[in-house]
Amino acid sequence: MAELRFTKGHGTGNDFVLVADPDGTLDLAPSRIAALCDRRFGIGGDGLLRAVRVGADPIAVAADPDAVWFMDYRNADGSVAEMCGNGIRVFTAFLLQEGLAELPTGATLPIATRAGVMTVQRTATGFAVDLGRWTLGPDDVMVAVGGVDVVRPGLSIAVPNPHVVVALADDDELAGADLGRAPVLDPPPPAGANVELVRPEDPLVEDGIARIRMRVHERGSGETLSCGTGAVAAALATRYWAGSGAPNDWRVTVPGGVLGVRMFPAEDGEHVALSGPAELVYTGVIDL
Image 1 (cartoon, rainbow, N blue to C red):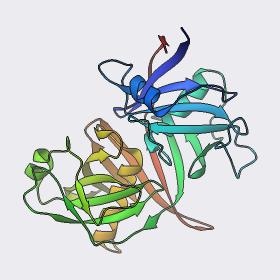
Image 2 (tube, helix red, strand yellow; image 1 turned 90 degrees about the vertical axis):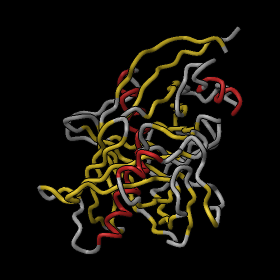
Image 3 (cartoon, rainbow, N blue to C red; image 1 turned 180 degrees about the horizontal axis):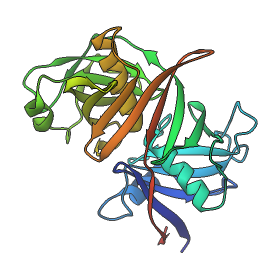
Image 4 (spheres, rainbow, N blue to C red; image 1 turned 45 degrees about the vertical axis):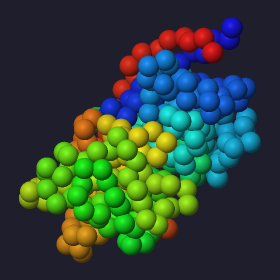
């Protein structure tokens, strides 16, 4: 029976199974990924991150010639996702632990994803990743969430994963929402979407930093303790609702911890960066 060496890691509780596949030889069908991510019969995780060299797999493409590694991200059900904000930080920690990459202080590491090349750098508490430009979608998506009495409007934002962000009225609504069931979106996005429920802190801004709390239902995974691109989408949506006076630095509290979001100008438009911790928990071997 074949064996698979893996590492388990997480970013603010958003957990992943990580595997190194430099030559792109692993057979990881969706059903096998779902079995590995199963929390009762497998390793358990919100998704799987496969490290494959750019050029060793037909899907592993990069616009940046310096990008050596491609992050193949799959949701817990085996479905494909464009990117993962928490995952790319954990992926970076995995590459460094395995000796597959180096990231000196002050340097950046380009990583290829299905959404393009993202650059990662070290911070005092983990890693920060430049997610590039973001896109504002329609604000006429209606969202029905279990445990929330009234259907609410949501704002669509791609960073680059598709998200729909919903503002809730108070803390009780945020705590009482049932995200064990997928929220119903009308109209439904063609590729589905992650749904973020947001509650601004009071006051919203303190010492120049805006603060929000968030829960999330991820397509293909269900409710997770954190979602990196979801935290970014939630901050962008709240800034949009708050108006031109809102700051560009945000602190997003999720059930698994705290993430930082920063919006900043670049040559091709406004970019957004995500920062937070990345923890590698253990390494093991499992029979396939």
